[in-house]
Amino acid sequence: MRDFADRAAAAAKIAAANADEVDKAARFPREAFAAIRSRRLLAIMLPSAEGGESATVGEIAEICYLLGGACASSAMIFAMHQIQVACLLRHGGDDTWYGELKQRIAREQLLFAGSTTDAAGGGDIRSSTSAVAASAGQLELSKEAAVMSYGAEADGILVVTRRSAEGPPSDQVAVMLVKSDYSLEKTAEWDALGMRGTCSASYQLRARGGSCQILPAPFAAVHQMTMLPIAHILWSSVWLGIAADALERARRHARASGAGKGTGTGSRTTRDIGSIMILRAAVARAIERYERASPQELLSFGFQAEMNLLKVSVSDGAVQATHAALRSCGLAGYRNDTEFSVGRHLRDVCSAPLMIGNDRILAGASASAALLDLNARLFK
Ligand SMILES: Cc1cc2nc3c(=O)[nH]c(=O)nc-3n(C[C@H](O)[C@H](O)[C@H](O)COP(=O)(O)OP(=O)(O)OC[C@H]3O[C@@H](n4cnc5c(N)ncnc54)[C@H](O)[C@@H]3O)c2cc1C
Image 1 (cartoon, rainbow, N blue to C red):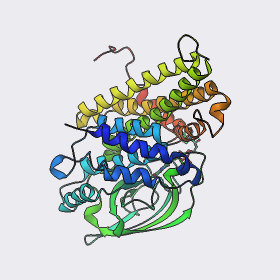
Image 2 (cartoon, rainbow, N blue to C red):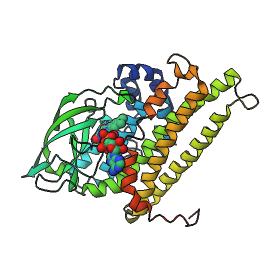
Image 3 (cartoon, rainbow, N blue to C red):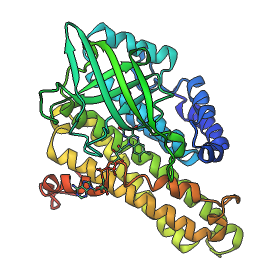
Image 4 (cartoon, protein in one colour):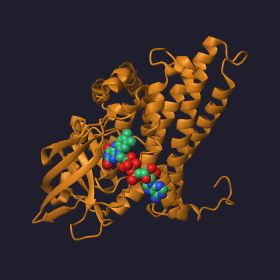
């Protein structure tokens, strides 16, 4: 009997109780992560044989959604960690180093961060300026990590970088590092509009390790098969969780103020609840597609375009619904000190269209989107 929902609900309660404080101080949500760790939720995606609980992507997405409504920063950190674990799981290779790492993640409930963004490339994940140097079984790496969430709190980092200093920026690899492999020098603080508890500061990262820690698959495959779909599914779940909680506050406000006489809900809120239901169904379909897809399907243009468009639609839809919740709550939502406050929700969810910019995604996805057959059957 799997009790992820109960364990996640208990952690979400603690996350919610500390969310305002975390936001105000722009600090790591330590209470939430103590609760997540003590409920052993960090390694649930790993197979049972490796100390995990073989949780499905759908089960993880459900936890992201639940946490999203409680504390968006906690939810996003949880989602980002799971993305790194998913990459490790599918692409980690046979070296005993990876087997031991998975056992450690399960036993010690290690938390992993990800460093894709570098100083020059902005949101272009498929291009790196830094490069790893590997020889005689050892690696050396230095990277200006322009944005790295919870870097200082993490027990390890999955770093995306160029395969070699001589290679083109697009010939990338992913390198798995544990804390003892690297040092981080903070180069800029994270004082942002929202998602303040993710502590997404800038760092100079310097690392040494074994060359086996370079994932054997090219990063192009890691990104297409795992990082992109899992990120877009889990981030979407977080953003929908934020919007759903804001709409729930709007619904309660409408009931309390009698604005939605007869239905108990204002009409604007009702329409936006409808939009969120549709976006939730889109995420559920994406999860089903991901879990059933063969490696060839994962790499197909059609699948990549669908996952990209999911991210764009959900991020925009979640912002719109959260903004609608604010308008519905009026001043009670705008103030930071009422039970209907949605200011934090709105500030947090505003990160969604920027986290890999929607304009960048749309520009890159337009060629593959053109291949999508809109005349295909509705159900296939
Ligand atoms: C809360 C949060 C947490 C994050 N955590 C991490 C992390 O842990 N690790 C990490 O590596 N990164 C992280 N990031 C960074 C993130 O992954 C992106 O790299 C970053 O959001 C992109 O920043 P940018 O807008 O400056 O870059 P860009 O993508 O360069 O965009 C700059 C502007 O140009 C526009 N633009 C870009 N390309 C095009 C185009 N082709 N056509 C039209 N317009 C275009 C964009 O829309 C945007 O307005 C995080 C970001 C956020 C918001």
